Amino acid sequence: MPRRSSENQKYIPLGYFDSINIAGDTCATVPNATLYHFVILHSIMHLSWIKQISVRMKSDISYSMGIVYNNFPWRENPTEKQLKKFV
Image 1 (tube, rainbow, N blue to C red):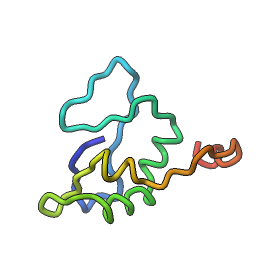
Image 2 (tube, one colour):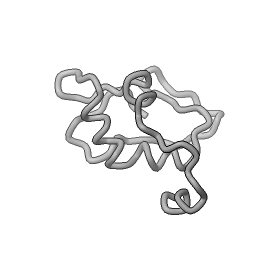
Image 3 (cartoon, rainbow, N blue to C red):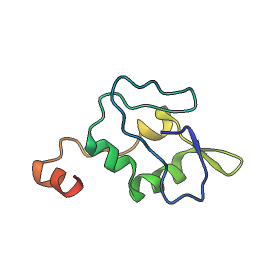
């Protein structure tokens, strides 16, 4: 996930990679992320959270793992039925 992104995008561009890939210093990574995490991070709900919580550089979004990701209200232990709605 890029650490900085335009505020005008509908979604923050994300990638889902395996462990042999190395992310550059302009990217943030979520080790051991599942498809559930990917879907939530790519959702409008998460983008709304980012736009409210994140620090700005000019008008661009600056994604911080400590401020944005760690404070996001994740649902703990979603049921299989709830997971099927996402995947």
